[in-house]
Image (cartoon, rainbow over all chains, first blue to last red; front, side, top):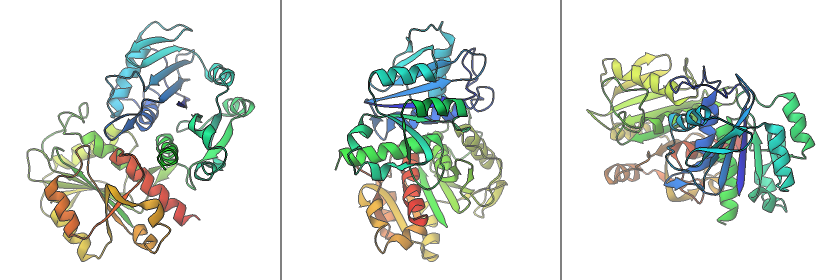
Length: 204
Length: 204
């Protein structure tokens, strides 16, 4: 199992988001939608061993977590509007602290980064934090870290990156900083690159 | 300079496309929009040394070519609707065999794959064709092919791949088959992976 956690700093967490304006009124929800596509889609199918956790930290609050589960996912296409539509539906149901399924494979609850990090730590999952000055994942996969990467939880910021308080939390959770190359890229592009490194290791 | 050519087998080439239905009525235009984003965007800016050539082979015909030029591009955001909107505008101007600029950095003309291949061949540009059984680009970059890759024209299919007649044309133009890993991926993901290999080689 691999998990991708994307922090949506301004992503709206209530009300009916507009599918015609995912970047604007929905708080750069387009960034999160692209991450869903990168993480779950391959050419002729879906990666079933992946969860994508979107942390929606925008208005009106409190934070919600929307989870896309590859194993049970249905009715998802690779275009941004498709994942956006499933997020829209998730935000329209009555949320609670307990995760509820809004559509097949999509789950929603009230929750924040701190809770999610705690849960992964309790499960003893290895945490990785995408950061420009991190260790290069193509080199790490050649080392004893390979098994950790295969079972990793990967934490990424959105277009605004990760704010200081969240970063401290991630570092306190003992996440290992990793990078995917010499240039700072879109979050969705980073996901594609991580998965390619893992694909190559698995299919050697 | 690097060029990406994406063949949109069903992509609509006339009339006003619907930005609310890029996958459906616009003939999987979403695939091409994602390719534009992968090729041109990095985290804080745009790749200025890249052209993206979209070959629109769908209805009503004849084929058109829409070119996104990184160097002169303006008013483009990474979401699919943004590139879709610029394609929409390109399809609304009176096209001819001579390329015209529809919005800053976006150009349109009547044209097809055969013509484009001829033009690149006349310029003696090295052609690469993305195909699952091609040579692995991460290995090629270690060889004398590195300089060719840096100046490459990369040809990709869309969700339907490349049909037989187009593939013959590409092979006759002496394109070298390359691949990006063990799993068949979305065209946009392949572009991200190629550029990462080139970024790593340039910034070694």
